[in-house]
Amino acid sequence: MIVADRVTVIYNPNNSPGRQSSDVMHELAHVVLEHEPSQLILSIKGDIAMRSFNAKQEDEANWLGWTLLLPKVALEQCASQKKHVSQIATDYCVSEQLVAFRRRMTGLDLQARRRRRATT
Image 1 (cartoon, rainbow, N blue to C red):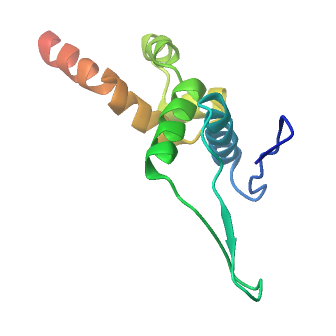
Image 2 (cartoon, rainbow, N blue to C red):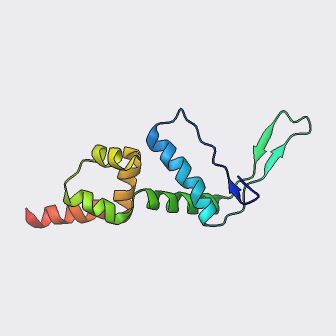
Image 3 (cartoon, one colour):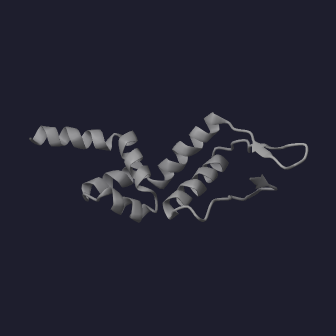
């Protein structure tokens, strides 16, 4: 939420630290990308609240947030040090799922498989 040049990020403190990192970075990515904030829609009685949803903006915020949390160069360095997914997740305060996703999306897993095939 942006109010008078201030940003307030609301996240669930009950989530894992890795999920909290992802949630906060996702919201900051919205700010960096200058996305329009979603609109809160209340029922006439005020007992039901919904918000608008822009799938394109959400995808952009996910990609940027995840890339900032775990850049390809960091993953390459971790791969060269033969770090396990769980160690990378701990070192970067992200989830193991995010580490696996970023490795797939950056092509590092495919490159590693090709190198293993070439040496066998």
